[in-house]
Figure 1: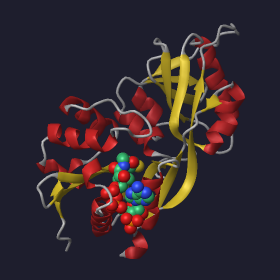
Figure 2 (figure 1 turned 90 degrees about the vertical axis):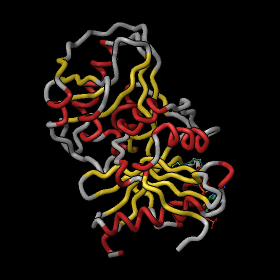
Figure 3 (figure 1 turned 180 degrees about the vertical axis):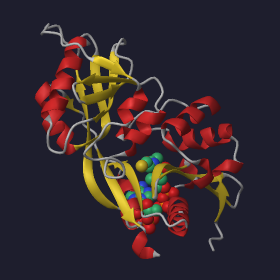
Figure 4 (figure 1 turned 60 degrees about the vertical axis):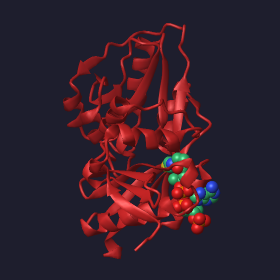
Length: 282
Ligand SMILES: CC(C)(COP(=O)(O)OP(=O)(O)OC[C@H]1O[C@@H](n2cnc3c(N)ncnc32)[C@H](O)[C@@H]1OP(=O)(O)O)[C@@H](O)C(=O)NCCC(=O)NCCS
């Protein structure tokens, strides 16, 4: 029993209150998060596939919320979708206490492993996860390509329903792939569109605006990256006036095989996909 903190289920806390703690924890973070209100927090919870029934806060003796851990549970895997401690409560053991509680709950519901993504440059968080048994699975990189003026031959792409895209095969999926680029995230995504060339499909945000996010790929076979490159070449040619970016959640081989050959530049910050086995702790 920890005398300093008490565990509170996220389902018992008003979303606007959760947003306040979230804003405080992520103020001055490595990447800028927009200030959240209740609606923004609800959108974040939805986009991250967070299950409030498994997510927890740690409350300090003074009654203030010190730390939060949001869990997305997909299959028998828990993903720590977000964790943070309010600045005034840092280095008091709040995150360590909460994380070990979340791990205990995941073990109790017989999950196989817990996964998360963390910026390699975020030493406090990386150290917290290593101390709690997480190991690096792979590095995750982000990529960006400026709008182009050159006009190549435009190959027509077929737009298909998102749900059809999620039914296509993929050589790897969650939990070996970050959840955000998996079929599970695609199925829940808001405002995303799916474009197909032959058997391969790419998910992107609205291509008619100036900044387009690459969200993931489906339909290619293991080790066969050429169809993915052809599709991305066709896509960036068709929407050449847009800047394309892929957030820092793409494992290394996507960069080597797809983004780099098509002239994308690598973002400076990168993440680790980390995993902690739970089955041998039962
Ligand atoms: C990362 C974060 C959640 C740690 O929370 P915390 O409640 O201060 O962490 P704890 O006091 O429980 O510390 C647990 C362990 O984390 C590591 N740690 C925490 N802060 C650290 C720091 N400033 N430098 C190095 N290690 C640190 C240590 O290993 C520490 O163990 P120790 O105190 O025995 O050395 C907090 O710094 C935070 O909210 N940062 C901003 C948001 C963020 O980065 N979230 C994680 C995104 S993946």
